[in-house]
Length: 326
View (cartoon, rainbow, N blue to C red):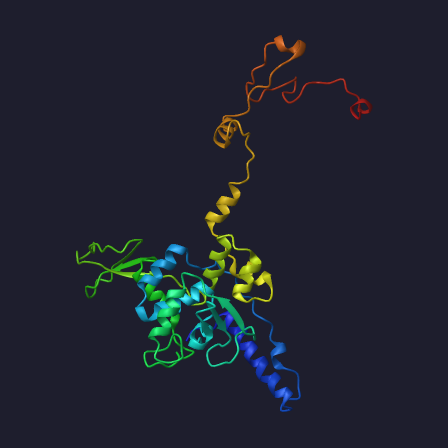
C-alpha cells in the first residue's frame, strides 16, 4: 500500500479529531485534543474534471440499462453518491414533479444536515418514471434484489467503464500480446496496428479518464453556469450555504470559455479590424508625416550605428556644468 496523499491525511486527521472530541464530551479524555498538534496538509489544486453535454449523452448511452436512471438523476440534479443511492419512491411526487433529498446512504440526513425539495427537470422525468415502475421495492435505484446499494459500491468504476466504451478516454496504449515481446505504443485512436518487432496484431487498451462519481456533480454546476443560469439558482440546486463554494469549487471555465471572453476585448480600430491592424504594426510604424518648414528637407536615412565626433562616441559640446543642469 502506497503512502497516503495530503487530502487523505487531512481526512484521517479530522477522524482523529472527532474521536477525541467525542471522548472529551463523555469525560473519557481530559487532555487536549491531539489532532490540534498536527497541522493540516496542503492539498494541491488540480485542474477540474467534468463532462461536457455531448460526453454526458455518450456516457448515458454506454451505461448498462440498470445504471442509467441512477446516473441521469445524479447528473441532472447534482446529487452526491450517498444521496442518489438513498432515494425512495416516496420521495418522488410525480404530480408536483418534485423530489425530496433528505438522506445519504444509511443516514437520515444529508451532508448539509437538512432536507431539500428539488424540481424534476423535463428531460429527467422519463428516467424517474421508469425507475418507479421497475423497482421491486421502495428504493428508487436498488440492487437487483431490491435492496439499497452498499455505501462502498464502486460507482466510479461503472462510470469509467462506460466512458471507455463511449470513447471518452485520454488515449490508447497498444500492446503486443506475444510472449516475450513487450512492445507497446501510445495513440489517440483505438484502431489496432501491427507490432514493428514481430508483426503481431497490437491490442489497444483504453487509458481511462480519472473521473470520480462526484465529478458528475461538478459537471452539473459547470454546465448550468455555462448555460447562463444565475449563480443564486445554481447554489439552490446544489444546496450550498455559501455561493462562493458554488462559483470557486464547482464553476469551472474551460479554454473555450476563456477564449470567448478574451475575444470580447476589442482594441483594434473598428474600420480596419483586428487582422489588418496587427499586420500593419508587425510591418513596422509608418514614417511620420512632416509638416512646416522642415517638410521639404531630405530625410536622413539611418545607416545603422555611426561613429560621431573626434572620439568616435559623441560630438564635442560647449556645454558647461552649470548650463547642462538646465
